[in-house]
Length: 166
Image (cartoon, rainbow, N blue to C red; front, side, top):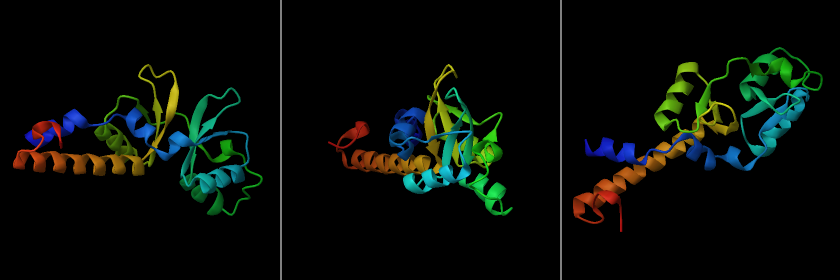
């Protein structure tokens, strides 16, 4: 019971996960009319596996991932210098995370749809904020578990009690 209360009190939101994500520091958007090779260059340069696809008005309309490239270009022997991002990206209803979604909610969305990236939007679902990956969630869960173990260990020996090490 104590463990569940500690985790609930310290569970980060999708926004806080994004703020520590590698996607927070880079330009992870790509226009739908760019050639696919430009996406590959960004994947490589930034060491990421997904980009947000935008239209000419900078509105996010989808995502393009390494998986899209493998399944729709490489496996079919197509030329990535001729195809445009809009030819291979995933568009339409996109699975998103609200900025206040918990780690569990984000993880459940990813597992339900077998995806590795989530676009993060504000709570009014009007503005795109960023993107998070499964790797970002795992890092936060690992950090959260380490913090919980520290708090419980400190509580057991009488140091810092419930609120953490001192």
